[in-house]
Amino acid sequence: MYSDLSSSQITPMAHRSTEILTRREAIGTCPTVLGDIYRDDTNIAVWERELPEAVQNAVSALIIEKPHYRASMNVTPDNVRESLEESLDPLLHQMLINDIELLVNMFCCLFDLKRAGLRLTVIDKAMCPRFHTDKVPCRLVTTYQNVATEWLPHNLADQSKLGMGSGGKPDNESGLFNGKEDIRQLHCFDVALLKGESWEGNEEAGLVHRSPAHDPSQSRLLLTLDFAD
Image 1 (cartoon, one colour):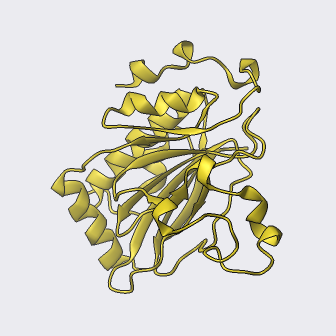
Image 2: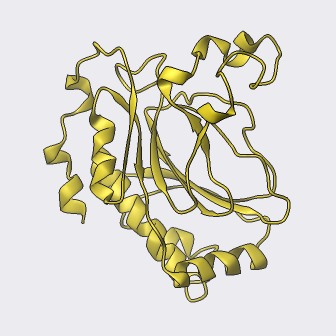
């Protein structure tokens, strides 16, 4: 799988043109769609996938056993399994660990990274309820349980209304977007790459996104991967 995403097939960020006027999404059911994040006109790439029931069972077991679980660490493709097994049962949570190891390998391969910043968190409230962009080159997100991240297409978002530009108004009143029909949402298990403001040539064009409204009947399990320092 990884050979399709190897860095030798991808033009380095430093050599990409910055003459960009629009942004679009790349969405597909094959993991190779994630390589489209290197397109100048793309600020989100989504691999739509389903997960085996064994992975979902491991997720449920984690949330029941550790309802306040939170892990934050720098990992490499070689040590991510060992690092996770320090806080997760290698038998009970094996299928989840396998999947996270896969994603770390793909993320590091795609961006030619030696290590990644990993956060795995059980969430019982909205972490970032306001729309925003990230001051990072690119972030991988996937939700293993419950509702997933919401986002706005670039051409439907007035970024001048983010943060202080909202004038203290909620997102749905600030003029950031026209109506709720503009809001897109990832599905549970989707793997998404969100291009941020620190990607060269993507200034003022980072993906606008937010945490979904919290469903009190069920906790979320969220994984994010970032470029490690």
